[in-house]
Length: 464
Image (cartoon, rainbow, N blue to C red):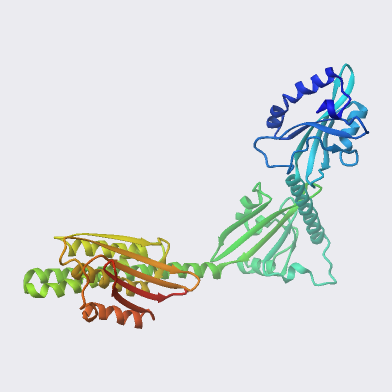
């Protein structure tokens, strides 16, 4: 490349080649792009004869710049270094692709003659943006400082119109300004008149740790007497020197009281759920006791169905209590709990496998969850009681699909049993149809297919 584009001698080309072998190390060590530019043989501009890209940095150039021309208009620091035979450090430049870079340039010499330049470029676009933000922030704090030093008595002062109590303090925490809201809060909390040229710590002794915080901007929530406040403290600077503090107090007592009420309500709801669950389990225990004592064998089947329904509802509250939300139920957890319990209790002499395909992130309010749970209980019970009478093995697949665009939920229970033409007349499936239509505003159907029997519940829930 040097032979084709430059007038360098063989000795000078050898020097360039040896230096090129070190470029990648230099680039990785400094996390910068590194180039070697030499004079083009047919004009006064330069040409890039070598480059190295840092391994772990974002691309500064979209394409390789090898053999590209370098003009003084775009890179004056490179030409200045070559003319003066001196290094150039920390020169800001803009690449032809619009990136802001910091350039460091050193001449390459052989036998005292400058033959090219070694250039190192680092992307400082983010640094420039941060410097601009700091400048704007500095100017803003200076403006605020001046605003509070010289408020106009002839106009409505803006801070008097805001809802937060506002105090402007000097570097010794002495009050230099307070707005109308600040005056009222001091009177309400201390029964004293707010005044200038007194320490804010004489008014609020507990604020010392906020003012002495090393951060430029501090936010704290603090209880003062019977009220709650959000306290903001901003350090003000002029020419990078601390000139004062801007302190704002916002009364958040109402928000705190509402938060406390919500917490109390949540605790009360969880306690109600806990008692309902315990009461249902007590009823279930009484049914089990009666089944063992004096229920005829031919009637135990009906007692077991009632027992399963009670335990199904109890499962809803059990799942609620295991979640952080006081009134929403994870449907996947609920249906799996009910299905596993039914398979365990109903198939002592059969090997029935039940599987689930339900999104673990689906939640429903407890009143809807109870309806879905009861329907799931009846459908799975139906399959266990009727589908596998002539076989010792079977499969039940439970899926719950959710179309977010239409807010539709579809619960499907597919078994591979023999099917039964009397499904539609069973008491349990009549319960299912009633709940689907009246409680869920949906519909239910059951039919035989090539696999066995498919039961489907479709309902809509758009959220709260």
